[in-house]
Image (cartoon, rainbow, N blue to C red; front, side):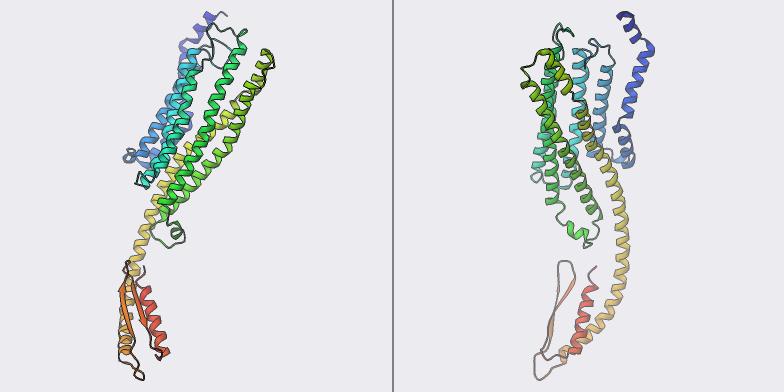
Length: 401
């Protein structure tokens, strides 16, 4: 079959429809589609206009644009069969351009932690290092755009048989630059996560011990929020630390391939490049780890909404319980005051051997809890003193709710 016949079959209506179906299927099958639908359904239309809602929507739009560009480019006829890219034009307008959309999508997702931190810490001064590390992380990621467009897979007049070595040499140089950027990107990601958790601990979770040990009420949401934030960030840090050494070792391999096999013939160098410089496996690991980071955004939103609902129920129960406690305490307090006044009268009139009488001070602290300070005569009756202390303690307890 001639090349003209192949092109005619490639451009037939049936194949064009099939290609369009494959592109749409790729978009629907991607994780962002289902997760975005679930999250937007749970948070409701009224909250779509929040910063987080806009971020999630822009994230999926940029991702789908990248998928659309990449998959349309892959469907063009291959000018150089057996090579990574059909042609220079397909690489430039398919692969490289789709990466611009992908990196934009990732940058939008990377700002999620910053937006969430800013919502809790209102002072820009306190989160300045979060801004700095986030921007450095974005720069490390976007710098790959430059190397993507700098790379030209096929030189002018490319002959697959004659110029095979030149092709693989250029490819390895491009991969080296790209993976060095990826290595610094993962380091910057780890630093960014650590700075976020330090900022939250210093400015938001300073009273976490009181919350977790039950000494604070109405703070269920904050306790759950901290636990979720810590686990999420620790998990992403562990993933980045796991991936970074793999990327570093692969960069070393590429550098070795470019500088330490010059004694080999071009044919042997080409064989070495083919056998040792493929990055498909490590690229899949890197992409999956990055995707986990963005999937956690959706899980984070679902859990926060769940905790928010639980917090409302907890607060309502606390209010009802406090109302009942106040009614009971008021009844008990009226009886205690009768006994307390009688005891006070006894203390003010009872004297032994000319000693000074007992006295007490009543003060209110900032929490409006009654505090009683008393000083006792050394010769005071121990029986009355014990009763006096028990009433004093009970009186204070009735005001601490």
